[in-house]
Length: 250
Ligand SMILES: N[C@@H](CCC(=O)N[C@@H](CS)C(=O)NCC(=O)O)C(=O)O
Image (tube, rainbow, N blue to C red; front, side, top):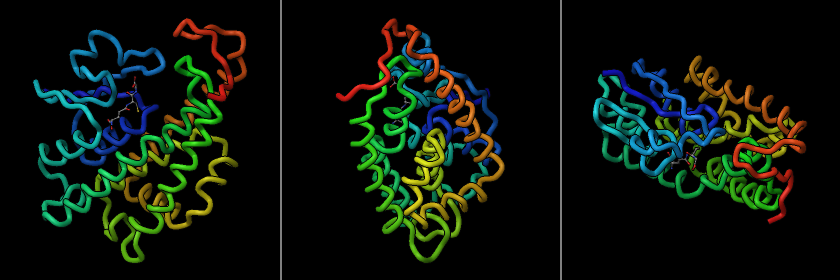
């Protein structure tokens, strides 16, 4: 039975799962759960993931949510997945886990939240929020500084001084790629000072070509959609039934 991925490519957590499958030749069916239509809240999807978030997978009768748990499951459940993704060696695996845990603890209020508050919120009927965007920007700039000075080392092109990427590289890179949805100037302002991070992102794109860029390219479409929506938003009622507010200072 084909593995099913319940995803929306607008979500960085979903993109990492799709890219992992593509890179490793895992056959899958992509079931689109449209966040902008709040399909994650539907009764049908609740049967797949009662937490009502994406991504989730169904492998036969086995259901699983949480992107990091999914990546680890796929790395172990499917044959011939190269060891560097999720090393069998206890010490190397523990280090990868350490980056993944750090990522989940610190980044949820990072690029995803920043792009949400500063650009994407209206696509789901919520107001932009400049104060929250400024708060999250501070937090994730601190995270970028940690990647630059702790997780990226002088030796090795990838996190933890490795010569090959792990699921931690894939997941963090997808998170940071969410910034693609911003204007070039804004992205440059945020990422520009972090030269090692920029080099690592390039190395990651190259190591994961062509699937990394192909799956991330969906963001360009969203960027265009968001810009159009920004132009017309003032006069429209959103799906939530609320009149959208373009700026909120809460
Ligand atoms: N920790 C979860 C986060 C999942 C998550 O926040 N998903 C978002 C999309 S990026 C979602 O489903 N949001 C819709 C909602 O919360 O209603 C993971 O890594 O899978």
